[in-house]
Amino acid sequence: MRTHLSSKKSHIFKFISFFILITIAVNPGKVLAQATQSADTAKVKLNTNAQTSVKPTYPKVVGYVSFILPLVTASNSTTFNFNGTTTIGFPIGVNVLYSDKFGFSYEFTPNIKATKGTSKMNDILFDPGTMFRFQHGFTIISRLAFDTNGRYGFTPVFNQVYLRTKDVNYFVAMSLPARFGNSEASSIGLNLQIGFIFN
Image (cartoon, rainbow, N blue to C red):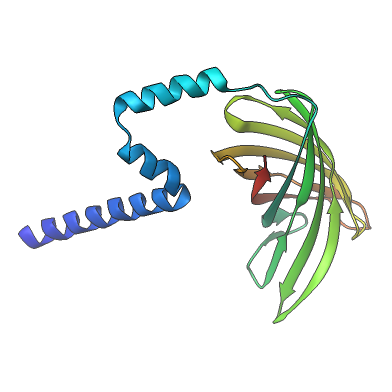
């Protein structure tokens, strides 16, 4: 009984240690600074930041880079990425922000496809869209889609900024690409996108 309990405690200790290391790795300056700050110093810094924060001027142009993984696509049949064939895209884009609530995004995505030990540049997707910006870094983007493989359609994107730094903001997004045309059956998919926006 005692051995089982100490094994359990050991697993909990390892998990907590791993979590602390990941937190420090993601933002070491912030974590270490907070660990050495006194409560009074933190209060003064918070008040100073609140007083000196300046609202951004619009329009504002920011660029971003990312990678995107199609997880599943449903058409006449359902196909999963990494199941014999692997596809990965590298979206590069520019966002023109007109206010805290609205913007426009221009995105180009070169896609690479690997299957049976070979890989190739498969297509390039151009998908511009309107951005509806909400509080806490959440954005809904309604994109049109024009693909060099002859397909077209639209893609709703649900985007969340999960970490902000001085130079870049890190984001994760889920998208639902709907595609038509080129004598193929209509399809809908689920994609995962991860990247960062330059401030």
